[in-house]
Length: 369
Image 1 (cartoon, rainbow, N blue to C red):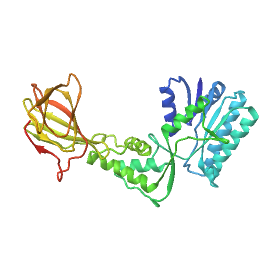
Image 2: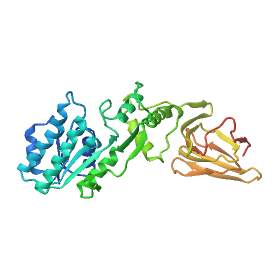
Image 3: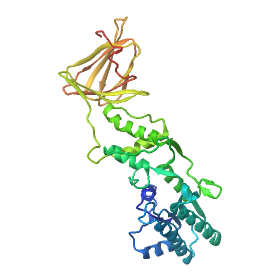
Image 4: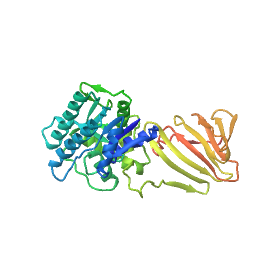
């Protein structure tokens, strides 16, 4: 299948082309304003499907709205008609097509042009009125408040929120691309005359800003957001894509002594805490028990033994562990336990606990195994 994508270097276009490549579509005609106009003629002659994503959002002069959003659409359709190519055509419109402003009027005109073209030629028309689209590769300070907020907060730049109570209707770029490829395969989500991305999110500007600020703070707190919420998960992925190139990493606080080190890695209220424990050769750590706090140990490097004893019993249980055979050992409540490095090198253990360490209520009681 030969696929023409106009606006291929734009936000949606770049994501679409990347995913088409992932799915092994090999004949993709990428057209943008930087390309020779003669190429458009060749592409329109051979295309089996057209994704018309080209357009302007913030021109220098408002007359460019109609010139680009309507004018180029007209040129595209006339070129297809010249070659008697009645392949399906998808066009990216906007929810602003119902608003009486230069941008909305230009989008509305492009829609009507495609519907008329479809009526005349029998070509299938897929018209998507997108709300605000967010995700990676969206240009900040252009047409997306989410992109601007993510970029500015990640780069310690000020943001402006005139009314935090404004409700935003948003769609995520991956959901957009999934729907466009469904349309390519004849499975578009059609509602009346228009097509829609079925997954949308409604949230206020103030809530968006609070979430993004919490993402930034989470690196200091060694926490991660609640990934069970679909919007939070998508917004967090978007935020990370705007991190400064020299700021992908962040330091952890290593608690070091002559026995080795203990470092908290990730803390979540819903799923507990993950830490990295390093034990020097011959070192035993632990010898304590818990009422309710429970843990999982996973030795990933080195060799050792984990010992348990029920606090009212003399019987000792041993599990020999090694980075050569990864296995998780549950640390049950009511058992005093320790872990000893039996090797000649540092032993590295990933430790999960079901709750944060609370110095006011540690639920940790010393008792030799």
